[in-house]
Length: 179
Length: 302
Image 1 (cartoon, each protein chain N blue to C red):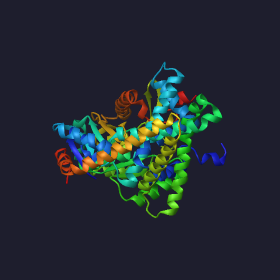
Image 2: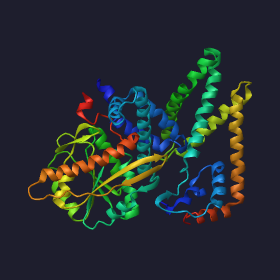
Image 3: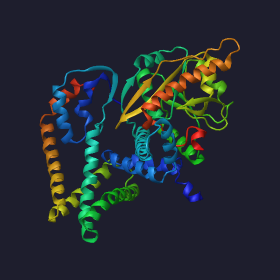
Image 4: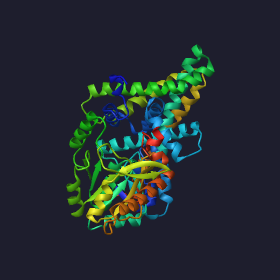
């Protein structure tokens, strides 16, 4: 377990971010912040520590799925009812799908930690659903466009981070991340 | 309640297994979606809602039912995250970020040569708190707690602890007043730090009467008697979840239970009052972190 003690600026260490879209801004902020000694903090060096990243991705999943569900349900329920029903419906469907696919992956794969498989699978499903939304002339296609734009920006950010990988490592070290 | 329905009670082994399943399968970025859903589920269908709302009516007198209903959601939201963080720690050794409150008392505790008692409450996650304590101080914590209400849950937890290896936290389950007493006295006198949850008493344990938010409550007498017998300090300490994967370890000024002559009960009363005053001030501020799903006072249950 890698811990950084007594340094408030460690919160911006790029190593604490997972997706390039979030790691790149962290890298840019971490380059500018000064060392901030603070005896009352302990930071963990572990990707996925940033709450904004996690909430943003979780919200993107729910909002896009609910939008697509609303479009699908509109012919049967009408616009308002479909909009009202879609969010709780999607929340339930996500739970059921998660358990179902989790059990399936448990049967198919030996590795105990199946989070990377599930993550890739859910993202693939999101992109397939977004491709469908793009092919419609509904309002949900704008959400699909936003999702694809985010994915494209993530690829660009990953490329920038790769080019600047030595500076990223230096910034991590400067923020207290051990080698 | 029907037998099949009991399998889905909040303390049943079903939810522990489900939580472990989620820790092994759920991508980190999907955690907020799950926490939001299950907090809502337990708010709507769980028996715990009534207990939480009754407790809130004492903590926040004068608040409307709707306000406390929304507050109850916040309690379940935090509970879902705390459970999730604990299981993630056990399965993946992922610990959260920490901040300290009352650092000077924490350092005093760490430096205690003669052992000490940490008095804590059902807040945050003691597994995570103990791990941090161990990382920072190099000392382990000996936790005494009530056993799980469901024997199947108790068995499951014991199996998980055995499987995931030794933690910085050694847990002993206290079932009777006489159990563990000598063992704990010996441990604390030989320099161990013992943590006890002092906000709830289980059947069979010796309790003392106290007042919390103007309500009569019973709290465990054990930690106070132990501190008196071993002549060690009691440190009130609370583990508070302040955000996603971010916790606060709040340590308060220690107190002693000093017996003068035959005034044992008077010494106990002073110490119990010191504890309940501290507990009340923390719960009043951090009510959304107090994971007490039954009314804390019989007066509230009535």
